[in-house]
Length: 627
Image (cartoon, rainbow, N blue to C red; front, side, top):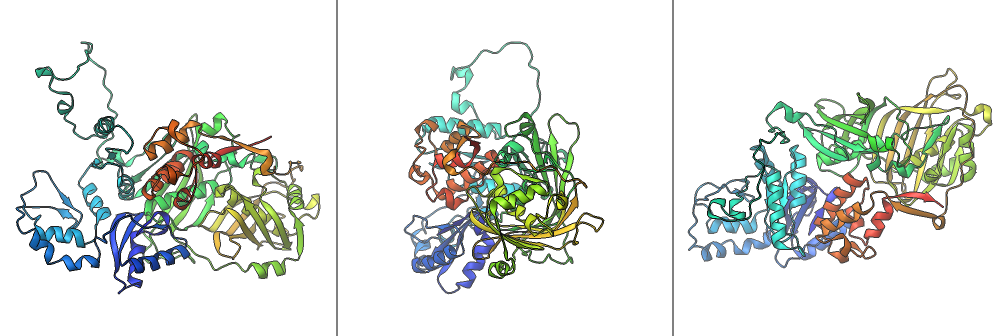
């Protein structure tokens, strides 16, 4: 049985097996920080799978008939070496690294006993890759009829903080000769030594077709990155779309706003007539960076968050949107002896983070957000029943947004997700529904805090505009999708912004059963000005029947999906589930990463394997257009 992706890292898999000690189940393979294989008795594996399903952990049975690398192989411990006693191993002519012993093979040691251990002991693939990359620049070439370990190798190199250099050879349903030549080209481009004479023949003996080149000298410019041992390897340039690199144990990633899905906000939230980039966008980027760096796709806790600069929200599809990027930098900090944050899980170290706004046409970067981040985080469930009991004033959704305009907040139709809302002075609770999830859903949920303000909707004179300047703590877990709830508490002065200091709010987003999926605590709000913005009328959100969508990336999305599936874009049936087209769990992990980093769409592995189609992905990545 295989568990992958955000939900179960190898360490968590070992803990799970330890709880089932005596069941004849073990960790058989540790492929990467995101992929683990359990093996053992089928009945016990079925019970563990049920437990993982209840916990919402993605898992999938492996189609094999033998539970290799498990205690079930013990019965062959004596027989297998005896049958292989005639083997005459030799010393390897090229360096061979064993994933059984996690060390270089030295001497003629691959005898029957070794192959017995190879069948019985766990595969320490991720650990072995980590050892290999420490020895210097490495290009990994997977020799297989179809990519199986390419994504695992990518994850391992990213965790080690080294440039990713992975080449797959053959791909099913593709011409083998062409695939092999393409693989050689990729390996050569990554710095591997390729003997092209064995491919095209020796010119001296008349082999191959040789092109005539001009006799004058070529101007040369070296584009090869410096070796990892040099100081220059620790500087990372801003990149056009999305990339991430290791920096002395840390992380740097730059992503264009056009790839972050900011078009989905429409005009966003206009405060006193100006729309600013919602803070949830850079905060979500930081959380994803922590998950990438640690290999743990669980919750992320951000502490001491300071919003240092406000970025105007560019118009969807504008040149400004295409030229502007956010760059997140994570640097590990020494937390020894420091108190852990309340609710933060001890699943990894802490990182100082900064997010800067980078504009192509500007000469300097602008600091946007800073703070500390750590993997993990949990909150006690929200008592929705108690909150609903306390909040006795019912506010229809349309009235909630109208009152928001009185306070100077004009909410775009794309963010109007509140369906019902109840409030009292200092507290509010709302039921919301979104179809897309992600940062848009987080921002829609945060807006419910407006109803917790004192004198909310008491008239234009009471309407004042405020902006968040900091958060004591933010926990980002599961993305809200479908129906969810927002509970807000106001804990500031009775008349915020009138000389009494800043306002403070806490907002918890939860599922219908009260399970917290995101928390924004100790939010500090400062007055934007003494005069509220004039209310503006915004049309009610369109119903699904009058909304259409146009793909943001056009045919690029379909081409990338086709590449993962090993076929051409023209051969894809956009209506059929991806699993019908050959998508397996490893390919789903690879596709998830591509959709996130290249197109800004976060698709869970379970969603991709659960009936999602090409058309569905294109629709989810589309820009809403009102008709």
